[in-house]
Figure 1 (tube, chains in turn brown, purple):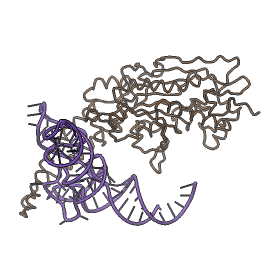
Figure 2 (cartoon, rainbow, N blue to C red):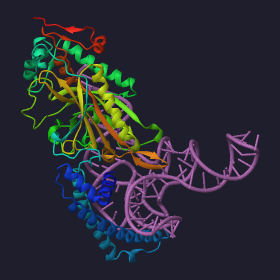
Figure 3 (cartoon, rainbow, N blue to C red):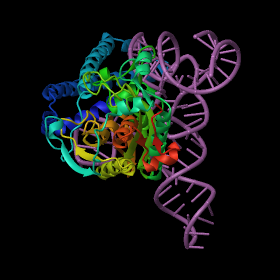
Figure 4 (cartoon, rainbow, N blue to C red):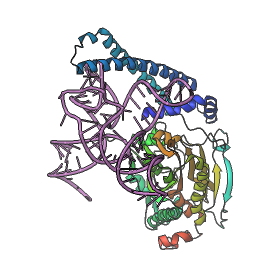
Length: 429
RNA sequence: GGAGAAGUGGCCGAGUUGGUUUAAGGCAUCAGUCUCGAAAACUGAUAUAUGGGAAACCGUAUCGAGGGUUCAAAUCCCUCCUUCUCCGCCA
């Protein structure tokens, strides 16, 4: 299987070398593609040499087999040539697998090619704001940060969290628990109404799954790993859900498949030491409702747009102001071809912050995972997409900040009240 | 964690003394014959990847994964994975 995956990938690079080079440049990636192509040529030569040797060997063996069946003397066939042939094949085979390993190592680290509609840019500064939805509320007082509000209401506790686990963890208490569960249920219900099937997946996955969606090998340092069992904690339900169809051939009529999945997510947040150290924004463990789609290639552009609408719909229903941003080539993730971020308004900071990331991976993940479908009796790779629908912890925080009242209480968005059973969280003090 | 059994093509299932076996047989699917039409029956086709070729076609690899023995492995040896059964332990 791995060999298949390699060769298909390299075929595309071989045939579109200039395009791939430009794409890597746009991503600020320094990958020696010429070296890769040389390895590819080397591979080709070795393969055909080995094939020639095998043809010889197979004919020879066949001959011996025939004679043996007829009980004829075969000793004359065992000349030193036969052994030489065998040894030669073994040697060449070793060389080949060394070359293939090098190619594999190259390919697995090459990111996806950005879609043509993605703005070229160095980083987040070159992202393009598409639209604003809803308007930030004007406060007659100085709005507080969500962790201040939450601790005062005794629904968040970071002291206990750091004692039990360390920094970047949160403990939810009292109505905080209700609110968290309410948000999760609300998200799931809305997305199910929009045609997504709910699924609950394992939080621990193997290496192959992480490679499939593209977290490995490059993002290893941002993953929690259980060394004894060589399992990883998922940084997003995307990993478990997208891998459902790894090594599968789907019927055309089966597509599109749309899933919604709640999960806890785990991230080491290596390299973000200074950022968002307080509150719920950047924790090692957080809840998220994820949307995942498997679609036919010609549908994926459109499916990304509808995915963005589906993610945005829950924010609109919660009446949380947000803006939609198209990420530049310098800011999109490793596996993605095109990504929109939804950034929700945080009244405390007075800024928009990411609450959902919706991506079209095209066939990038499908190639890694070998997910195909039958198109006119031919097998083609599916396209995969996913997006948060949306991050639960950040929604919790956004509600606190946007719905805070001057007296320190927080009102609950109307659509959530049937889930929480209450309309306001008051201070107990 | 301990003991045992098994993993073959879309599915079922042969193969177990290594040798014209990519793999019998059945089911399913597709096409054709027959029929007014259908069923039945009959005939034929039906894996994937990759290399060569305009094509017909030819080659190579693949019988859970990886490695080994051999001129030759689905068949022998080693490691790993998965599933099932029994025991133990815990929810």
